[in-house]
Picture 1 (cartoon, helix red, strand yellow):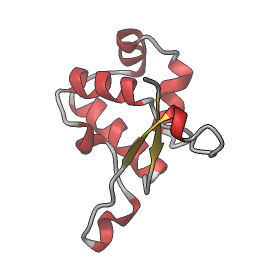
Picture 2 (cartoon, one colour):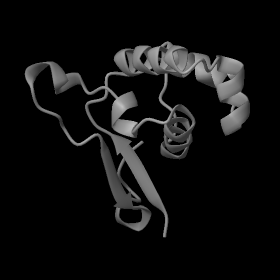
Picture 3 (cartoon, rainbow, N blue to C red):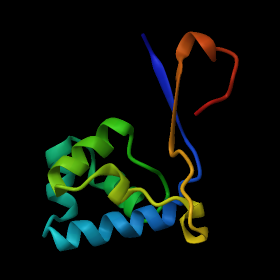
Length: 102
Protein backbone atom coordinates (compact mmCIF):
# COMPACT_ATOMS: atom_id res chain seq x y z
CA UNK A 1 0.00 0.00 0.00
CA UNK A 2 1.41 3.42 -0.94
CA UNK A 3 1.38 6.26 1.57
CA UNK A 4 2.07 9.96 1.28
CA UNK A 5 3.63 11.91 4.11
CA UNK A 6 2.71 15.50 4.80
CA UNK A 7 4.78 17.59 7.16
CA UNK A 8 2.80 19.86 9.48
CA UNK A 9 4.17 22.86 11.29
CA UNK A 10 7.84 22.15 10.69
CA UNK A 11 10.16 25.13 10.67
CA UNK A 12 12.59 24.26 7.87
CA UNK A 13 15.23 26.81 8.91
CA UNK A 14 15.26 25.76 12.59
CA UNK A 15 15.29 22.09 11.63
CA UNK A 16 18.27 22.73 9.35
CA UNK A 17 20.13 24.57 12.11
CA UNK A 18 19.35 21.74 14.53
CA UNK A 19 20.61 19.15 12.04
CA UNK A 20 23.81 21.17 11.58
CA UNK A 21 24.32 21.40 15.37
CA UNK A 22 23.81 17.65 15.81
CA UNK A 23 26.18 16.87 12.96
CA UNK A 24 28.88 19.08 14.50
CA UNK A 25 28.34 17.57 17.94
CA UNK A 26 28.79 14.06 16.50
CA UNK A 27 31.70 15.12 14.22
CA UNK A 28 29.79 14.16 11.07
CA UNK A 29 30.46 16.30 8.02
CA UNK A 30 28.27 16.79 4.96
CA UNK A 31 30.26 14.34 2.84
CA UNK A 32 30.06 11.59 5.46
CA UNK A 33 26.32 12.09 5.93
CA UNK A 34 25.59 12.17 2.20
CA UNK A 35 27.69 9.07 1.49
CA UNK A 36 26.23 7.13 4.41
CA UNK A 37 22.58 7.67 3.48
CA UNK A 38 23.09 7.77 -0.29
CA UNK A 39 22.16 11.34 -1.23
CA UNK A 40 24.11 14.16 -2.83
CA UNK A 41 26.10 16.73 -0.86
CA UNK A 42 23.77 19.34 -2.37
CA UNK A 43 20.74 17.65 -0.77
CA UNK A 44 22.37 17.78 2.65
CA UNK A 45 23.28 21.47 2.16
CA UNK A 46 19.64 22.19 1.25
CA UNK A 47 18.49 20.51 4.46
CA UNK A 48 21.02 22.41 6.58
CA UNK A 49 20.04 25.74 5.02
CA UNK A 50 16.33 25.07 5.46
CA UNK A 51 15.44 24.93 1.77
CA UNK A 52 14.04 21.39 1.89
CA UNK A 53 13.52 18.54 4.34
CA UNK A 54 14.87 15.01 4.16
CA UNK A 55 12.37 12.30 3.25
CA UNK A 56 11.08 10.24 6.13
CA UNK A 57 13.41 7.40 5.09
CA UNK A 58 16.39 9.75 5.08
CA UNK A 59 15.31 11.27 8.39
CA UNK A 60 15.31 7.76 9.89
CA UNK A 61 18.80 7.04 8.53
CA UNK A 62 20.09 10.40 9.82
CA UNK A 63 18.66 9.70 13.27
CA UNK A 64 20.42 6.32 13.35
CA UNK A 65 23.73 7.77 12.17
CA UNK A 66 23.61 10.61 14.72
CA UNK A 67 22.17 8.33 17.41
CA UNK A 68 19.23 10.65 18.14
CA UNK A 69 15.46 10.44 17.79
CA UNK A 70 13.79 12.02 14.77
CA UNK A 71 12.03 14.37 17.22
CA UNK A 72 15.48 15.65 18.25
CA UNK A 73 16.13 16.78 14.67
CA UNK A 74 12.75 18.16 13.61
CA UNK A 75 11.73 21.52 15.06
CA UNK A 76 8.08 22.55 14.93
CA UNK A 77 6.94 26.14 14.53
CA UNK A 78 4.73 25.97 17.63
CA UNK A 79 7.32 24.66 20.07
CA UNK A 80 8.00 28.18 21.31
CA UNK A 81 4.45 28.46 22.64
CA UNK A 82 4.73 25.25 24.63
CA UNK A 83 2.93 22.62 22.56
CA UNK A 84 3.78 20.43 19.66
CA UNK A 85 1.65 19.71 16.60
CA UNK A 86 1.76 16.31 14.94
CA UNK A 87 4.64 16.65 12.52
CA UNK A 88 3.85 13.81 10.15
CA UNK A 89 0.57 12.83 8.58
CA UNK A 90 0.16 9.58 6.69
CA UNK A 91 -2.68 8.77 4.30
CA UNK A 92 -3.28 5.95 1.95
CA UNK A 93 -2.48 7.00 -1.60
CA UNK A 94 -5.82 5.70 -2.87
CA UNK A 95 -7.67 8.01 -0.44
CA UNK A 96 -5.97 11.17 -1.68
CA UNK A 97 -5.68 10.69 -5.41
CA UNK A 98 -7.26 14.10 -6.03
CA UNK A 99 -5.77 15.93 -3.05
CA UNK A 100 -2.58 17.98 -3.13
CA UNK A 101 -0.72 16.51 -0.15
CA UNK A 102 2.94 16.93 -0.96
